[in-house]
Image (tube, rainbow, N blue to C red; front, side, top):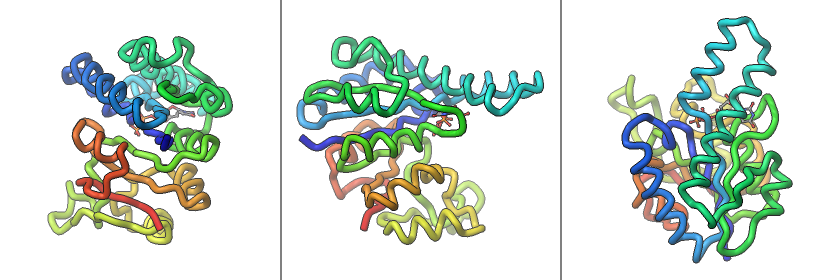
Length: 227
Ligand code: UTP
């Protein structure tokens, strides 16, 4: 069975638009695909992370404290997805990559959030993919792929269908911020480049696109980063 890790942005899980309905549909899709793929989902914190982080920042708390709050929000999001999946995922949300990797099994879905301060859930998903020997990572995000420039600012921006790891490296170290924020964070990118782990950037709210990406289809609307 192929192993697939999904980095599910908080902006996808809890944008505040029919979230319960979306979660039920996402859970159905994951249930169906778990018969064919061993799935691991790492949930982001989204707007509740930003709320707690900004509030604690206004109180003058340290970055460590802000990250601790961020991690707690990723875990509450993970718990909500676990509730949607019920018996397919363990009640207990794993708190380390090692714990999550050990929970993986055919027909089961592992759901987690963040791990330690200073990381992000993209980084956690790459570390988990490395630990379990996953075939690919799906970054389910609010942009629908990587663009040559910020499509909100530049009407000439074009979506990139395929990218090599070398091109990802160039993009991340370049000073033009083409699509940078949407791609993957630096720690995660470092791992996927080192391990040559295929990374698919897709719109997470589009469940047909999610199905294609999890199944490893080359016909996605988003961007495939591989050799
Ligand atoms: P993320 O940045 O991963 O969630 O974690 P997000 O904002 O939902 O992700 P995207 O933008 O939609 O992809 C939220 C915050 O939690 C802390 C960080 O402060 C991060 O900004 N965090 C998360 C950690 O400190 N360590 C982790 O392992 C994960």
